[in-house]
Image (tube, rainbow, N blue to C red; front, side, top):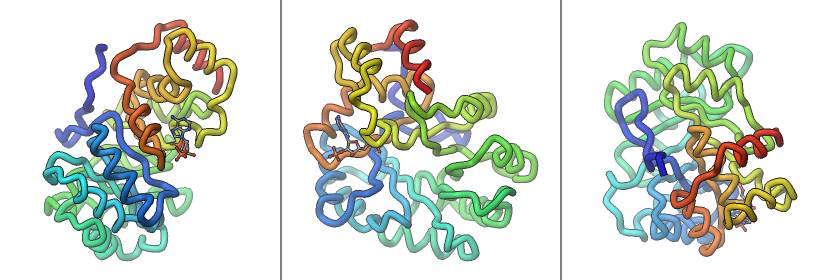
Length: 258
Ligand code: A2P
């Protein structure tokens, strides 16, 4: 279909373009959903310290029985931990039951300037090998530019909200120009617009579900998508996005939504 199932990060590591989002999944439901996602073929998991589910994500990973290196594990530094980045990263690894993180992100910027001190600490952990790739989340164009100017290691990833209704074109363009991978969170718009008639028209045309169409739209824009679902059938269906393609006219119709 012309789009590889992985993107190569500026660290040289590869990251699957489809990941499993775990925001709002808790407890056993989270554990079961993570195991189901890995069984359905997802090879990237996205969590965060503030989701309060890192232990369950780790348990779900072990339930699925894959080798550690076959799963790309991504978690995020909480705002409350900006003064203790190393400890917080170690604690996340302990909760997940892993020795290293494939990707560690600053979850939210603390203010109007980039988080330089946090970033310097993450650069040290990256050099040590504990954080294979480091990045940011919810960073604006201005903040990314500051980090690129003053940091030693460029961010590998910026995770932002992205779907046809929320399309941060300026951030996507900057990231593409700077070889920063965009991870799209809420790629299904948290299910609030799946019944939109314009999405449905495209879905009818390609014979797919609105959810698959929204995910494919993100992938064709070069983003890595991380849909969340607690339901095994929807988890499986959301992974079926590599055997069809949206034509230019369909992409253009969806681009008009946001
Ligand atoms: P559920 O967990 O019951 O499947 P996002 O990834 O944009 O944050 O969206 C997550 C929301 O979308 C959740 O409420 C999830 O509900 C719902 N969802 C996930 N996949 C589908 C799907 N294929 N069809 C309809 N709703 C879905």
